[in-house]
Image 1 (cartoon, helix red, strand yellow):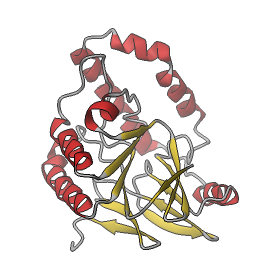
Image 2 (cartoon, one colour; image 1 turned 90 degrees about the vertical axis):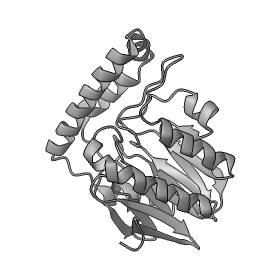
Image 3 (cartoon, helix red, strand yellow; image 1 turned 45 degrees about the vertical axis):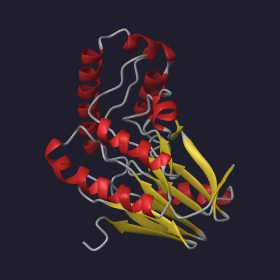
Image 4 (tube, one colour; image 1 turned 180 degrees about the horizontal axis):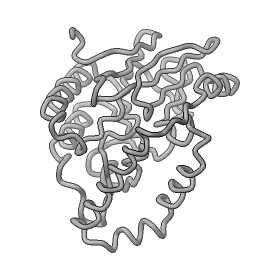
Length: 245
């Protein structure tokens, strides 16, 4: 278990690259938000699906998020900590984000202590929706070394275009998915394992609630909601950006 000190910010589900019209507004808002996080020398947790697709070839990475990744690099160089937890759209993480940008990366979940409180932080796909057998099977296939090696054999322009098609299909499927996760039961299970806080992305609908003495934050997204989580001075809150909106 890792140990950390606050303040800590939680952000998820921007799906950058998927909604160009929205991003004309959301990306400048995001840059302002990152300025705010850096000014507080806080720890930023990106809880999955920052990008609608991410894949690293051996010598090529997607060019579209360059300005954002450069901003993250500057934040890290200025003393901020940024942890990137992979989501179901961006989980093909190699070592570029860690070595060249300076982010701490995690492909699954983070078990950490912040100011003495134990946090379970995960994107939430396949955890909060444990009844979706088809999704779990597909996730196993996409995570396999064989799939990764085969994808690398494609020209990047072809591979990235194909991945964006799959991302659009996944979003349409998610919008039709009537599988409502038992979040209360999931949080109750985490509470029995000693967690004080559970932080999830993926579900896109922001929510903050308690199950006994354990609090659960569903962060929301930066497509419709522009919400984020903040843990500061021993309190976890759900907030909207910009703060005065």
